[in-house]
Amino acid sequence: MLEITGLHCRYGKVSALRDLSIEVRQGELVTLIGANGAGKTTTLKAISGIVPAAAGRIVFDGEDVTHAGPRAILAKGIAHCPEGRHVFPYMTVQENLDMGCYLRRDADGIAEDLNRIFERFPVLSERRRQAAGTLSGGEQQMLAIGRALMSRPRLILFDEPSLGLAPNLVETTFEIISEIRAQGVTVLLVEQNAYAALELCDRCYLLESGEVTLTGSGQELLDNPHVKEAYLGG
Amino acid sequence: MNRWATGLWVGFLFSIPLWMTDQYYLHILIVAGIFIIAAMSLNLLLGYTGQLSLGHVAFFGIGGYTSALVSLGFDLELTDSYTFVFPAQPVWIAFLAGIVVAGFFGWLIGKISFKVRGAYFVIVTISFAEVVRLVALNWIDLTEGPMALNNIPPFTLGVPGLWELTFWRKIPNYYLVLVTCILSYVVIARLVGSRLGRAMIALRENEPLAASVGVDVTRSLVLAAVVSAAIAGAAGGLYTHYIRIIDPDVFLFIYTVTMVIMVVTGGKGTLAGPIVGGLIFGILPEALREVASPEMQWVIYGVLMILIVYFLPDGIVPAVSSWWKERFDAPPKTGEERA
Image 1 (cartoon, each protein chain N blue to C red):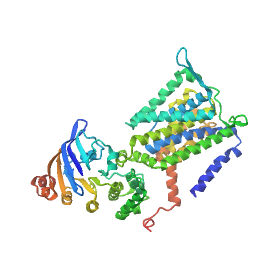
Image 2: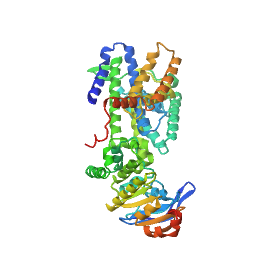
Image 3: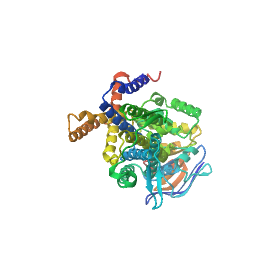
Image 4: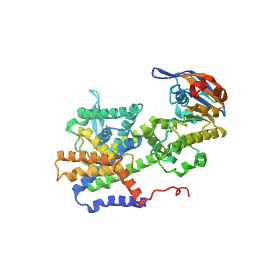
């Protein structure tokens, strides 16, 4: 479904990704793990067209989307749920969700998806008229996920969804992500919480200074001595 | 309830000339109304997209000059042997031409500066206003420079030959400004409430996020700039045909500052904000004239503005409306929405 080959990204002269190649197949849940600055977020931003690729190819459903730009990529079915629970703070919950389907014109489908999201996240339904900035951290994360779902994506990119959440909310977040996958949406997940991510995923890529250094199933990486030592705390 | 209040307000505004016989007060209201239109146009950019245009007076002045020149007619010596002669046009056509030309410059400035935005937009707009001022000052063949364009015709209404009303007096000008004010308000309210308006607000709140949900950043901002500049141009046209003289001083920075003050104190990003701010700072100079010298007035505005911004950082309108909500509409407590 998504195929990245030989991707290079640079911020000025600093190279953030070097010859990165990963693949995500239809229906999979794939994670990228790695330390700060390894290039995980940059990879997601390159896929959704926010950061330009210096070299390499990104192919989605057989179509080259390397230089397509964020609007076109979103329209093709890739949604990005960015790091740090980004919401529009002075807009209401409802308006935030409406922004998620900014490019869609099918009113019936939108209403249906909105209902589904309110059913899944009742707290958002209760607070639909409230400014998003007044929600708690966990609720803002739910809103960010709900907004990403509003574009009815086929592939959803999650960037550190558990960052800064209370432990019980971290668990809820991961549950929601596996539910989304169970509904047939392909997921590419970036996580610092390597243990939880590896338990959840089908396959995983380990990124170190902009390169893929290891790949395998979740279990394989959990058993790998290097991963254990460096990312799972021994 | 809200509709009634709006209707009452509009009715009150329409009734003013019926009981306010003092022409001087009407004049103050007309000028304040013109500035309110300009402030509303600035609010579209500053309040809704978050882009600060510190050269907004350029669009006001361009609207004014264009309208004046089209209604007076002009000739330009293009080469030694050829002079381009533009015949005088009816004021209404001139007024529309002013709106279109101002909107065009809004598009141009938007195209140039919105690729980079933020501080660059501020700098480009300041420079633009200054360049336009220098052009108006030095292109004497066209603009008469510091000698000003004089004897600009006022608006007329009616069918030529049958019945015509020329707007020499205050009352028709008052209604003209009021109607333009209401139209501008409706245009801005419609735009802000639309899908594009929501995109503009999203840009103000979180630009990378807005881009990632599919908002076309440059296009939305340029559109806001065009509408904003066109409305500012309309205000300029009203000003020109009311005062009936225009000189390069309309481009002075102080007028932009006045508009910014009106928007910020009234409440940027609210529809009523520029109206409240415009009424306060449009009427205050005249109200204070008897008791304070002009120098003292500037000091008073300064202090007043600092007080407003310090105590009501979001402006007067948001402060009053949140006070109103707390006082009269009990906030929906938990459970109420669920039922």
